[in-house]
Image (cartoon, rainbow, N blue to C red; front, side, top):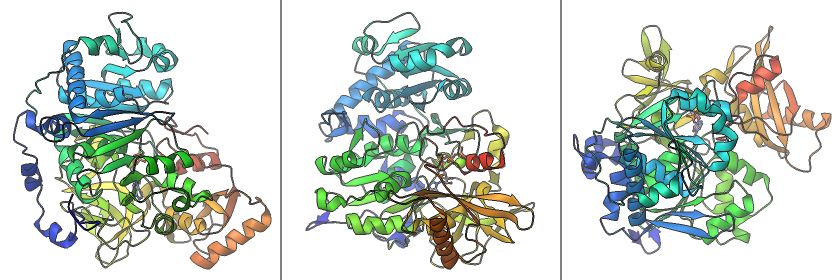
Length: 577
Ligand code: ATP
Ligand code: MG
């Protein structure tokens, strides 16, 4: 381990220097990428090359069971298991570029499916295990699934009824039946027992399709973003620079592989960097989470604002109850992380929580607060070396880049980085619309300050136009969150002819607070004092919870549709409370 005394030297210690000298070609050379060859395959880089070297006995994945016992997979074991699976699907006639889906909780078979599929040069697409039949159908249909790996219970409950509507789904592999049921419904155990643990990875081009990921559906119907093997360059370098992986590290990414974070950072990035990941098979539970951090001696913890807000709401002082000395880096992604939350991390863990920004479409982290860099609480940080980010107006004549510091505009990224999506499956026009000249328009609005830090404003679709102001919901929500009684807030614009839209806030209170008129007035007064009357909410409604996607994002469009009595639109990713 690179350390001076107990202090670990961050991989990215001089941001400006690295930014100037960075090139993707150098990263490609580091990983030994060529034009064509098995060495370009994600699973070769993530698993096989380590299994053939000195990491072979190192734990790649540790799966924690409900009762806190665990099962370890060394890099060598993972190589063999993923080879078996690659042999299984090749034996079933699966061709390069065809799609294998998984629909399961965070069980080992899901991870083996992911890596084994990539190894065979087929395309892997994970689905969130609790999706109901319609969301599952839409995605399997759109992604032209050929093979699905799932459990017996999910098959009986969700998939069986869809089979007739999915004629191209050739095989369903059930992880927990002993014997094959038919030529189509097969037993994982039988297939894997009979398969060889040796598999020769076929030649893989860096541009071969690898991963299909559906977006969270926060702004509308989820889109299927397609990524190629070369995306691994982003996974590798962000693992190094942002997550700051060092040999021997224990890493915990709490995201489910049903979302892109759970694949890019729950599977690929830690493996390519040769560290150990712990995977909890259970859902969120504050005490359980803290105890996992302690017992597993987690060094790097990657989670999301929704979980952090839940932890903040509870009256637990983690460092008083748990020994968390191993923890070195805490990171967050998925939604804006308020300055409050960053400082809460500082107070409760002795380190700020590092926010970073990216999307399904970008395949990996694009803008980040790096461990060695001064954090500006509430900011997303600075672009990854190798990524050019800017703010711009989108006009008929192309992009007009914003020169003034602190003025909001569309967050845009220069094309050409390896993990940028290559298409929206079957939605070529929609894909093309995301690009203006050489730039990808992300759909988010942001500001850049005089030192190059980016600040999230909101999704372009969520921006509220009130009395001539453009208000981002995040700004209002963050301020409301600073009120002592507020646990969570979601803000929308409600049409109001005299001012365009009025700002309405839905507020979840912290336990012990009565939802009454006095409290409403108090919160309104607080908001006006801190934001001014033009931006402060004109309407407040207390609610038990706010609707969220399964990946933990507030569904403002749903709140708005309900408020206005409009159709709810696609709610396939809505978390059931
Ligand atoms: P859809 O595209 O279907 O509406 P989605 O955009 O929520 O869904 P994802 O790709 O999972 O789907 O989420 C990416 C989006 O999440 C970003 O575009 C941004 O709006 C938000 N986001 C992610 N990280 C951050 C962050 N650190 N700060 C602010 N917003 C973030
Ligand atoms: Mg999106």
